[in-house]
Image 1 (cartoon, rainbow, N blue to C red):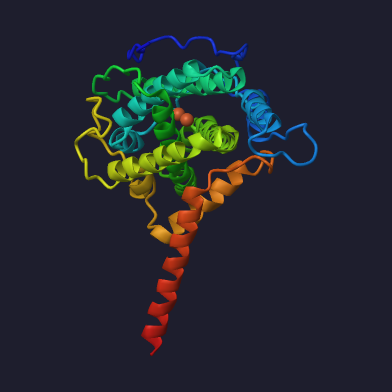
Image 2 (tube, protein in one colour):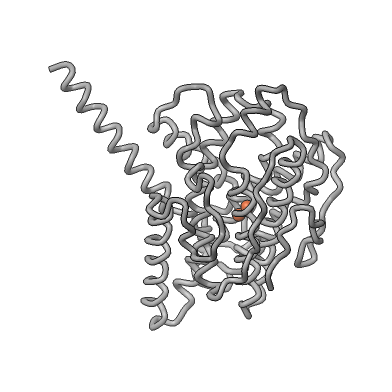
Length: 338
Ligand SMILES: [Fe+2]
Ligand SMILES: [Fe+2]
């Protein structure tokens, strides 16, 4: 199944018996309650929650379903911007890539969900795909509201290997969300954009946190639940995904599409890593940005059951990098004193 690329497409009803709620804009009580519910969840299972067990799978899938935020993208009240703020927003080099990334994530997650026979993972990943479609709708409404022109979208083609496509999308989200959490906090602190505009993206940010929590637990469950003889091949695929993403991210393929699907990557694929200058007028060092990403990552995951697996690669790499930076600064100070 290949999806319609029109940004005007109506959002379909959510899957798995979930429904949307017509919040009255600015009804802070309702919106805060939905936000609270999306951020906190503890499994009713007592004691140890062993990774790879049915209790683990059922807990992760219940977390994903029960923390669903029922907001309708159409109720978002886009604030009026002065010409300077509007110009700053329009000139961010991300709008095409952001809309297309959500469209591609929806396609890949739905394709993987429909390939599964396990009803619990199928429903959770289908819901995840639907939520990506809602993100795309939020972005589409934003670009319309502020008169941002988009390049025509490519068709979102059904992947030939849905598991590979899900792995690529899941690990990509783990990288992008980690940096996006920090950039979002920086945008909030700097006041470079009006707070009402930044605030409209809060549910999207927290949803990305839930998505990567689901992905990390699906991965941990898969690793333990699959027969031992399948594991080496699976791990090779995981390694290949990281190589692929590294190749994509360091820009060897600048201007080319590494997936070979012919979809455009002309805009900044690395914005979440390099975009601090575009969302803040304060000079922030790379070390400070990394610390902020780590703090925000911890804060966003803090409300979910501690027994669920968290994404670990980006936080570990960043912790290592901050230690190296700190050691480098200490050596520099010592040399300056000598
Ligand atoms: Fe998304
Ligand atoms: Fe996502």
